[in-house]
Image 1: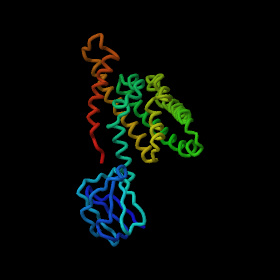
Image 2: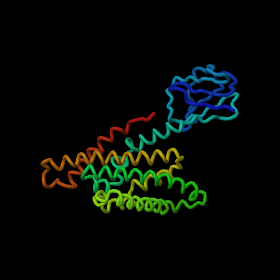
Image 3: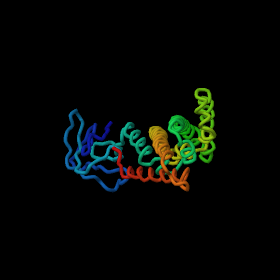
Image 4: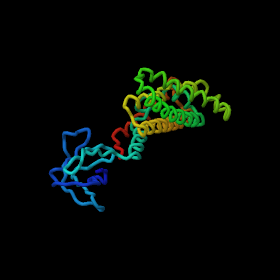
Length: 275
């Protein structure tokens, strides 16, 4: 049984029997299957029945490739490793497509609990664990129950139910462990139930047909991105409170201005390519 994997930026490793000359081997990106990638050399690998394909074009470990040739039973799909997918999705959702500064989601809780670093950190941790657990549970419910039974129209109701149960449990835990922090959260803790970011994660996974690794990465990255955003914003707001801000800009007006500056800063990650 033949197999192929990414070896380096210009090399693909084939494990299996390969017959014929270089002209019989065809490599292309899965997204552009009609455009073959030039192969300049096919050389024996370090082990028996292994071959190395050399290409002048730079390859990416995060892309999917199709490989066919004489001696191969069928076309091989070269997919990125699970760790590569997980890392790229986490970085992408935390920085490149930050839910707050890029997608403008979750602003109610973001502005309501970012006056002080203490409450911001507490909300970030709570938000991260609720988002992570709800993302995993929602993916499982969607793939085990909703999709097989063709009940996709119940996704929003099911996801809100999962988040509501987790938020209720979190509310009881925070109230028991740190009553002062629970009082500072106020109504914003319960607003996590219908928070845009928390609901966006399972809905994006369901819409894209994400695998478990991709769903896990999006849940971790979105929670980490929200935590980073609210912590940085709380640091800025504490300094703004001590600054001589004109009266007409005090409160939410200057907060929106600072948030816009953060959004412009995060826009710099838009051209970033992971792996």
